[in-house]
Length: 235
Image (tube, rainbow, N blue to C red):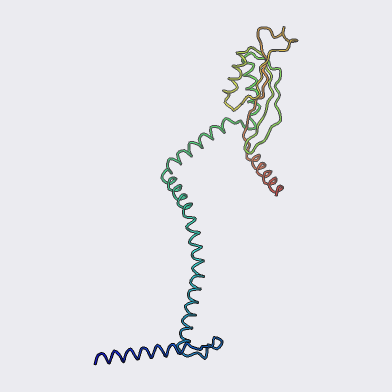
């Protein structure tokens, strides 16, 4: 009895598969609307799956591109995070260093004379030479050169005197309360015509002394205005 039932089921399945296969035979691809039900359902499922797959990959490609871009930024962001973390940890020390630098800059600014103090500084340089017994043969301030935040005044010098006095004068100039630097220093023996007058081993020193002063607020504003104008002209 059981074998008869199994045989009947197998016949039914075979008949169903045969009927399904018959529906796919002789289909006209130009008229899918006239296909039997099973081919139409199969075609619909295939087209729906293709649409879903194509749409999925189209959307996924944009997402994948964005993901790769973010992954590319990850090392830089990690490095930036480490740097900021180190700054945050060392913030008290950094603030202390900033305060020290500001104090140092303030001290340096105090060593730069203002416009009104330049005449007194020139007098100090002259007195430093006279105090060492030197004779000034030339003391000529040059043209002021204005920089971004300070002005530079070159002074052409030529003094004569003994070797040690000239060295002491150079040391006195470097120890002035205001910044003065010596450049292009040349020490020579006096010309033959002056040999008798400068007997006793006297020498002649030529140099360019440069002193610096800070710009006042008006001058700084003018410098910034000129810089902006030059930048605009270059464009």
